[in-house]
Length: 258
Image 1 (cartoon, helix red, strand yellow):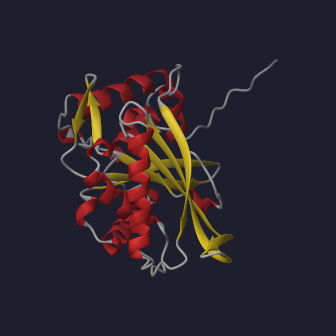
Image 2: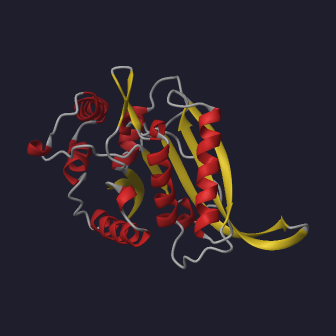
């Protein structure tokens, strides 16, 4: 069997190849469907999902935690990262827009911050991860793994402030969200990204019209499809079930159907 070397790889692909290079995976996967027929929001469901996650993170501390030297630590701030697609000629790349203190933001604040940060990332003016991505771009492939590991170790385990070296402090959130629905995908399960130290990944899929039983009759409802991946080291199925119930109740309350 012959192989052809891939010479042109995106920055994210380069990091991914350096990250998942051994066995062992603590991931647990599942799907969630939310009826948003009565939602009053006319914009993308993404800001509402982020706000719902923030409210759950405040209530469930295990969802807002990080491992340091094998011990669990709770984070003081509620930060959520959103994966941003960067369309480029000949390849697609990915980056992360991190929203800090999301629990103190309104849905409108989240929508505005996402638009601003995503625009800067796509224009290659990202003040948050821009310099780190440039470094990864010029590093040889074999060095990428060590840079990513060192960056994660210094910023998470040692909690160092590397802003003097133009590297962000607390670069990622405890939870990461991917808006796969914008790519035309209905359902997706997104893998955990080890170097981010995020404990949960959520994909927001397409909204579809589907039949559901409502008070003994069949109705066509607007259904939002979510994919969930969580780190089993932080919580188990019973914890996840309680979080999911609270998440569903958030949408029931905000849609006025509760």
